[in-house]
Image (tube, rainbow, N blue to C red; front, side, top):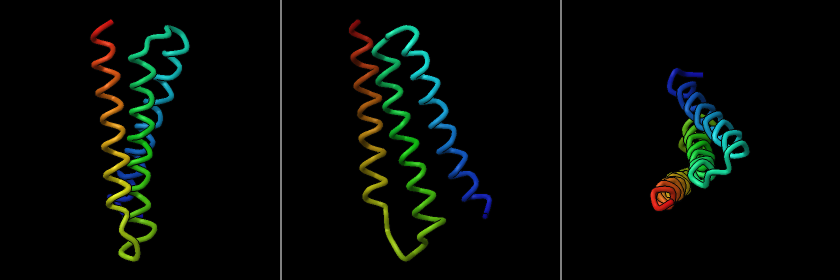
Length: 89
């Protein structure tokens, strides 16, 4: 495993841990911003996991650029929606 592959996994783990912590805080406070942020970070974790799969596991045999981009874009839109919706409250 190269340093780059390790960093891809570390980014995925960090995003997943952040999502879990946001979910725990949401259960305690019931703030919609926390829930939407949780969904956004789960999407970012999936995006980072796909980066690892694309570059480390499949290599040049498969190109997962489109699914990675779509998942990352959806995660950012969900996060932005949650932040904008929370600003109204």
